[in-house]
Length: 209
Image 1 (cartoon, rainbow, N blue to C red):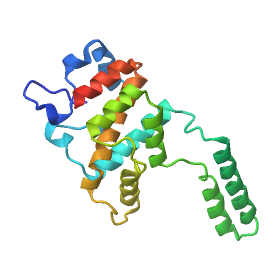
Image 2 (image 1 turned 60 degrees about the vertical axis):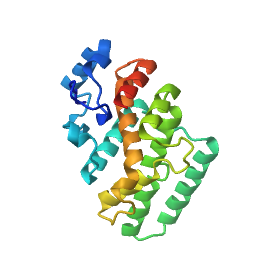
Image 3 (image 1 turned 90 degrees about the vertical axis):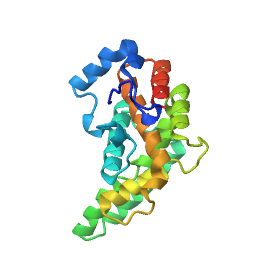
Image 4 (image 1 turned 135 degrees about the vertical axis):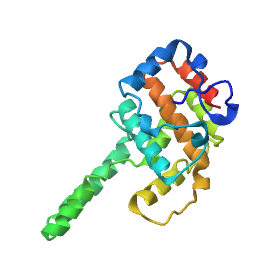
């Protein structure tokens, strides 16, 4: 988190030290003991608004890390969904028995990922589960409609394309709003992990504007 001075524009999306107030010591300590990952944070005012391929990888990885810390049990699915996952997994394990060893290893590896939630699902879960006051500000800052039923799809697709060396299905401008939302969510989750009250987290998000 870059701490700006009085020359910063409001639109630079940084939080001023005076806004952090009573929690300033907790935030500084989080940097000192590396609770906060510095490499995913912007290095300068100019850098804050620039989206690059590497920054998408870093931001999504940071989100996954904070998500696992805040939701160690992952996404709790309905019984019907868990049953479907189990049926698919059992079918794959049964099919693997009659396959050559190389093919069997592939099927067994894939079967372990049947119930693994992807980045898009985790983004949607965070937006659904985090405190309403916090999420409302995050959506407002990002300029995204909360009723968007494809939320998280574009940045997940771009992240996967980058990771696998594929041609991008969306240009970077198309993921701008989801990038800003994820930036807000990561910031919020980090503050929540420091046990900062929800209303204060929402207030600090508003300071990011």
